[in-house]
Amino acid sequence: MLQRIQTIYLLIAAGVSVGLIFVFDLWSTSDQVKVFANDIVYVFAAFLSSALLSIISIFRYKNRKSQFILGRLNIILNFFLLGFFVYQSLNVSGETAVSEKGIGMFLPIISIVFLVLANKAIKKDEDLVKSVDRLR
Image (cartoon, rainbow, N blue to C red):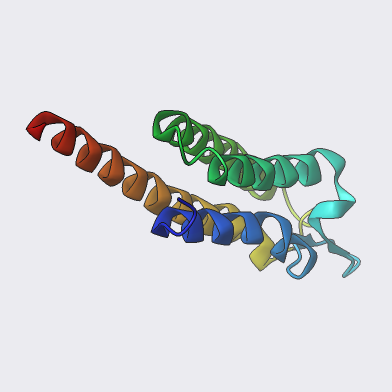
């Protein structure tokens, strides 16, 4: 059933992971060069894999348990991305690599919020199905 609310949440999370990385910069260097996610290969791969996990999770609607697990894996991946961005911005002393932080560093937080909402809705559906099965 693709018309459930978690599908919309997962689509928004995938859109944030794959669409907004080209719009918002991650940081600016001391030379005022804006660094986007597609400039760093492993960050770009992490954002794309996050979007891919969201899309795969949408089409696993018949198996809510695996959909829930994929959502958790996606949340963990986004936490790793967020941790990398925090490390990158705090580890560098002075004006060597990260001069000004961009809004793109906060994209994993937005994705995590929508993934948590999707997992909450998946859990609610699973509980509903279990309660109906108990009544039969």
